[in-house]
Amino acid sequence: DAVALPVARLPALGVANGDPLKSVMVFGEHARELISPEVGLAFLKHLCSKEGSDLRANTSFVMVLNANPHGRQKVEGGEYCTRTNENDVDLNRNYGFHWKAEKANEMEVGVGAEAGKTMEPFSSGSGPFSEPETRIVARLLKEAQPTLFLDVHSGTKALFMPYDWTLDPIPNHEDRQRMLDVLREVGKQDCPECLVGDCGETLGYLAPGSSADYSYSQ
Image (cartoon, rainbow, N blue to C red):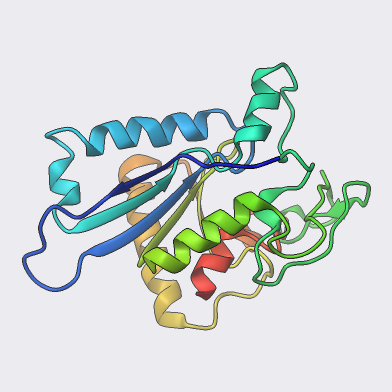
C-alpha cells in the first residue's frame, strides 16, 4: 500500500547572526505509543502560537507527526499492542546505519542494565530501508541536514542519545559530552526522574538500525 506521512515544515522566523538551528522531529514510529503523535501535535500548536515565536526565531522545524500511520490505524481499530507497520516491521530497526537482520520469532536478550533478560522481538525488515516510512524520513533528513534530531517515544521515562546499536559510546567525545550535557539539563528542569545516557547501555537492549543512530551518522 502507498504510505503518506503528515509532515509540518516551519522555517525560522528570523536569524540575526549565522545560520538557523535546523531540527527534525519524528513522532509515532511505534504505533501503540499513542501519545507520541499527540505530543507532536501539541508542540506544533505551540510553535504556531504567539508564545512559540521565540522558539522559531533562530530554529527551523521539520516535524513528522505520525511516522507509522497504518500501524496507528490498527491500534485505533482495536489491535492495541501493535508496534510495527503494515508489513509487521519495526520501523526503528529499519534504518540503514548498522541495520541487522532480525525476525519476529527470534528472541532477543537484554544487555547492560538488563543483561540476560528476554526481550520482545520484532522484524527489522527484508533489508535496510525496505519500508516506505523509513525511506521518507531518510529523505527528509537528507533535505534538512539537521543539527538537532529528536525521536519521541513513550513507555519509559528517559532521555537517550546514540548509540542504540552497540554498548560502545560514540567515538567523538566532544559530541557525546555536548549531547549528555543537554540531556542532563533537560532532565534537571523537566524530568528529574528520567534515565539519561547512551541508549543501548542505559535502556538495556540493543536497537540496530534506529532512526537516531542513522540521523547521527549522516
